[in-house]
Length: 377
Ligand SMILES: NC(=O)c1ccc[n+]([C@@H]2O[C@H](COP(=O)([O-])OP(=O)(O)OC[C@H]3O[C@@H](n4cnc5c(N)ncnc54)[C@H](O)[C@@H]3O)[C@@H](O)[C@H]2O)c1
Image 1: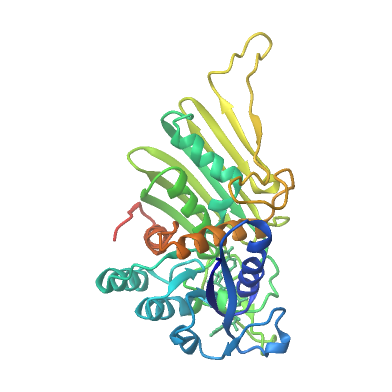
Image 2: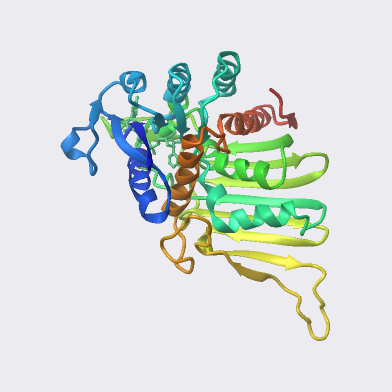
């Protein structure tokens, strides 16, 4: 018999809609005996304005979380809401799926993690770092773990978008420090940092610069009036991982022509990997042991076609069909649902997101002080 878990989605903006769509999609993509029922939503929108039906509609997130019929609390509210909602969901012993970043700053992230430890909370929990579920990234993880690159030496991670390039974009929660906690570092950089930790190892020290390119933006309610922007548009950071792997992270939300321009390069003694989200269907692999003679032999970067090759219980669409952003969310949610049904952990989890927040905190400290900073608790 199928195990059905009731999900309550908190916030029905961009990501609330995305998660609802992907929960619905899981049953098409996977042959699975664990499914989610769209049970409740907390939103100020009218039920008839939503693209899907729920059994229960709440205006207060807290009421949804306290509903005993909710098995999974899915937090898609603005960053400043995460801390209190996470703590309440842990108090209510719900499984948790939470959008990144964990919270708005390290102190509140610490509160979440201390509460988790002191309360003995042990339900399945995951933070939505969906890029771990790109098949090319999954293959990169396998190859690095197998030692195919040898000892790692250096890396570059870039993530560019252009959402804030329009100077007339109005102030929203995403550009207010007290509501978002940060700018491009939180919106996009947390994904890159999660992958740096996942693929290479924990970051120990950072040297960073941040820039706010557009220093004022109009108010939505009165576009004639401009107010100062408190969050950064660009981050440039040098990172050290483990003992001696060094690398760069460049983030921009004002990069003309960029969509989800997410890429990385990782170099080791025996080879290298390159990934660019503009062609997320392949992972480029260079094997330094390939013969380079005659006339180049077999040397050069090889494109490993990872496309939609999830394997296992993934039954739709066929593995040759090109990959897309929603597919990573579906894969992440599927794994999470399976883990929740079996009462198992689901990584990346709250603790992983806390480790990411320690690194973002060090980046902000370094940018403010203009010096090298250690990543600390
Ligand atoms: N994983 C990803 O790729 C990804 C992408 C975008 C956003 N996110 C994260 O998802 C979360 C939600 O972001 P979003 O893009 O869906 O935002 P959004 O503004 O589109 O939606 C936010 C929702 O929260 C509700 N809300 C509750 N209290 C609010 C308040 N005081 N101010 C504003 N809205 C309030 C809004 O009504 C809305 O339904 C954020 O934590 C963000 O970092 C993740």
